[in-house]
Image 1 (cartoon, rainbow, N blue to C red):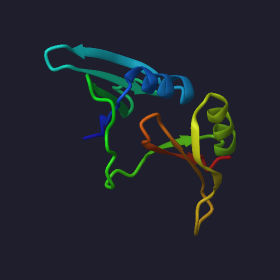
Image 2: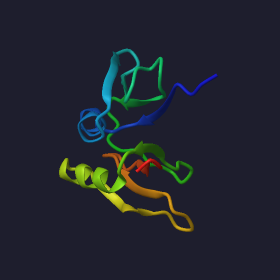
Image 3: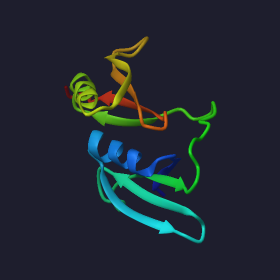
Length: 129
């Protein structure tokens, strides 16, 4: 068994695709419209779906906003340098909500950013830096 993908509902698919591909550097792996169901699925990731877990962005046509609820936590992405990643994300128009630095009660360097819908993404600095 392995994890295939995590699904997020997004209000503006083009804005979300621009964030995940342009700001985070993921690739658009596939995109399909389902006119009968009035939704579009777009899969993004850093590697091919056969090799790596990906994110499924689901856009239900006509939805302008979602309530995130209080059960969702975050997606975590390993980065080589969290400080540099935050600087780059800000330069590309991304929103950093917790600057890079050691986590409370530990030494792992982390940061948090938000996607256009407000989903949190944790950046965890590789231990090799």
